[in-house]
Image (tube, rainbow, N blue to C red; front, side):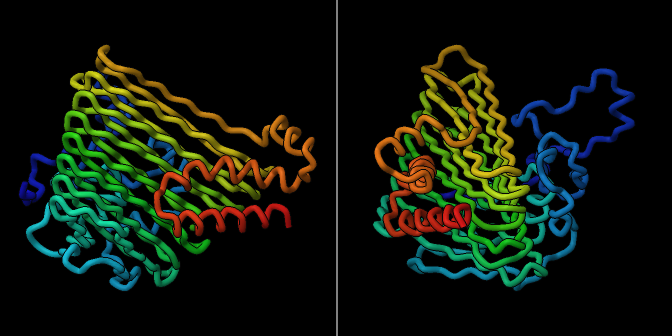
Length: 399
């Protein structure tokens, strides 16, 4: 199967700007209530600057994103890409599939589309099975630098690969990641946010999964002042599967956010969403909003989403909002859940009753809680790094 190049046209656009006066004049006006109803546009001018009152911005510190809301070109050296991959797989430039599926749904994403133009294109050839992950280090040049980026990851039919986007350093960075998984392919995409404390990162990940194909998508956020990574996954083809996993560890003053959207569109699709977070320190804040839509043609769907948060200290806050829309009655199953709390006293008592100190018992509980996500990565070296990072975070609590 050969990828078709598509250039966005007017038919891709839907206006996002709403005139307040027109709202009053139109007695039948109904505000956007669900993720599936949000407007999309490639034109930044179609989006008003967010005020923090909008449904998709009300939990976000909008003022701290000011640098990513201005329609001015970014600094060309704001971020640099290092590539530890087979050169034949990296194909920037013309003849790609940019815009085949991706449609911006907020202002930073539309600005990234405009100012980043075509970016890095990672295409995994048909039938290829890559034993080692494709590692893409992305390093910020400083908190005073603002930049825009676009990445296209395309798995051709019946290929297998893992791509790791590893963010570090500092910058103000708006990023679009378009993911296309062709029929029969199996792709894992891992986005690591290990920024410095003064970094600001707003990213939109949008993926489409073909027939009998599988995508595993991870968002792992440990660093950054404000990190907002919003993944959207559409299970388009019959028998497609999508697994969306997330892990965050918010420290004092950090805001770590993900608004997750899973759209079951084709029949007999399977989806699983699980995000876990830990929070410690004054004003540590995490936000998770999960939306699942089971469309009218998604018969035989099996879907579940859950978010779990563990608050380790006073002054930390976790916002968690699961949503589920079902437009067909012919499904295998669907559900959602959310829970936020402190340590389970029974677990601590059980461990302490067996001679384990309270400090060690707390460490074991947190590691057990978060390692569930880490162990799903399938990359032993990276799993060890992340478990060590969790241990380092826990050491700060005990200090």
